[in-house]
Amino acid sequence: MIDSAVDAPCDPTTILPRPRRLNAGQGTLELRRTTPLLCAHGTEPAAEWLAQRLRDGLGWGAGADLLPLRAPGPQGCAVRLVLDPRAGDGPEDYRLRIDAQGVEVSGAGAPGVMHGARTLLSLLPPRALAADGASWSPAPAEGDPVIARLPHLLVEDGPRLGYRGLMLDVARSFLPVAEVCAIVEAAALAKINVLHLHLVDDQGWRLEITNDGREPGDTIDYTALTRVSGATAVAGGGYAGRPGRTGWYTQADYRRIVAFCRSRCVEVVPEIDVPGHVGAALHAVPELCTPGSSHAATPEQPVAPVDGSTAVGRSYLDPGSPATLRFLRHVLGQVAALDPAGRRIHLGGDEPWAMAERYGIGPGSPYAELLRSAQRIVRELGREPMGWNEAVSAGPQAGVLQLWHAGTQERAALARAAQEGARFVMSPSTRTYLDQKYDASSPIGLTWAGAVDVPAARDWDPDEQLEGLTPGAVIGVEAPLWSETVRSRADAEWLIFPRLLATAEVGWSPVTTPGDRQEETEAFLRRCAAWGPRMAAMGTSFHRAGSVPWA
Ligand code: TNX
Image: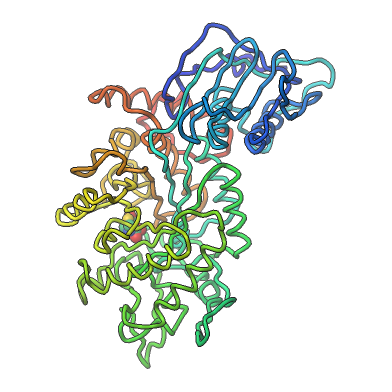
């Protein structure tokens, strides 16, 4: 009944991202259909998630169940999930012990338990990841068969950096809720813990904003944002003329994404990109199209055009118009309310080229002042602002800066900001940009940052991206998927996987001996290869990149 090929215990050196410490033992643990799964108070979400995977993928549970663990607990072989402060210093730290007594996952916090469960799952046969159980043919009712074999080991693990993100640009081309959740599920298995949603841009506005709670005198019809600009998308992108997908999230949809992410210990960072990249807002809201906005309203052209073009830096909000700040207060207020436990709101700030031409974008410019006002609104809502590296001109209150691509002058400003205590998320375009082609043979993807193949995505260090970084200045890494050439979930996954696994490992795993990076990259490629059957079991359309030694 058990397929002996998939039933051999996994090689623990394929755990991805590479754990802080791994002690491999000698023996093998047999997991049976009725092996109890016991969860201590506080570990229920991870336990339920694990139980579901074991049921669907391995046929676990007929005659066993998920039970609360109470001291002293049943003797004998079991899978136990506990919270234990000795498992590490940070909430994501965990310990995984597999021996003759069974499996113990102990997390220093709930996210740690979740990560431990993920590591355990990645040691089980890949079919344990088949979400719908399609690969499982039910066993006969009698007996208590072995459903998997696990290697004895001790893993003591935790992340190098607390922020390990994936960005999805749903503005250029839309991804419905179920597709976002499927991508998050696959990403979170590699311990990605932030979903940054780029919700608005020149080509589309993807989040419903209602008129509820409008300020006195505010005549803007916010529902037009999605009604008008949810129906537009990127049109070019060199993708055989096929337009991007239109659509938007209702507020209930957005809450479903947030709830799903929370259940996987993933934080959602929504991005409302200002003051540039606002073509879709200008298109839907005539009140924003003043003579001071780049798409100035004229009698012949009452609202800004949305032509689907991939050109950037053409639109901006009028820094002198009272409608601009009123709009931002209303929109950001609703965005914050949709995720009461949210910690950050991203304000974009990238590529304000038309504004730069007209006013300049240095410190003290209308660009910097407008960003500062938006940052103030975000802080008043109890959130920390984030911004792309251009936002450095807004000064120390800019919050977390996301470094993607900076010229010499800007690098100097960023280095000064670092000296003054700024914190960074590193997204160097030549290493983390998932929208770039893998190589010249990639049918989709852009090329302006050069090809980003899998080894390049692994072979870099976030602490080496800027001069003079103080310890702790880099809080994380993020891989952005811009969607100019994305038209489907399959396109998105093809560009994301396996490169995101590299970013996940750069953010999670400790540096071994500096200088050993080539060896580290090669070892990563072997771990990545072992991840292939797992992505296949999950139904992820990953790219079988030639640089990975797939089995
Ligand atoms: C630059 S990266 C952008 C995006 C584009 C991307 C294409 C960044 C902050 N802005 O608007 O989609 O290049 O690679």
